Length: 216
Image 1 (cartoon, helix red, strand yellow):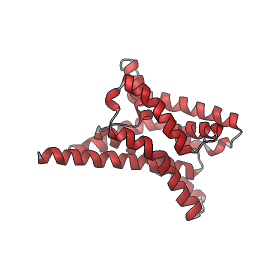
Image 2: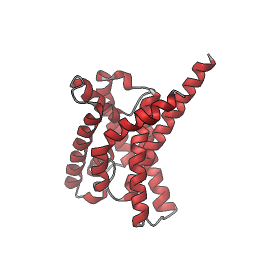
Image 3: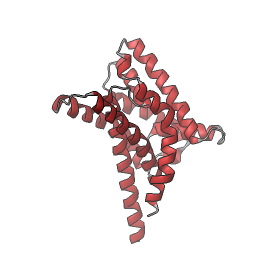
């Protein structure tokens, strides 16, 4: 019984740590001004088009994707799914508010590069951690699993993730252009790096960091 409680506690910590990393990732990408992560690129573009706050639109989008997840890869839904849906968008808003409005940090080029690197690493680590915790993952992170399942494994997870990331970036760019927003605030070298390399990074951290930690 004690061993089961210890395992459950470890899974909870892994899940919450992963979600914290994702919030840091989204906030860091936005602060870097090198472009945000792929999913945020779409949500920022659409939220600007609809004149909504980023956090509110992200919650709505996650709910829509969750419906698809429920009918395809239902095992991906859990406590971590709900916590992620509710918290990540607002966590990113909070990080940006603290940095820009409260502390008034001057984002010099070195700090922007640091924020970009932090966001890239946090993205891969975050998803890897809460996938290893197996307590539910974010609706969008389930999309790559849906693609993998739909192609019967012919498109492996890391490549399915690249496909979904590139697709949402295109949607974000189109939405931003339609709204007349500043395109370069949501897309840049960081967005491209995230779309192309996040899938392989998630797989690497999942195999070499997150899953070994769960077995300790």
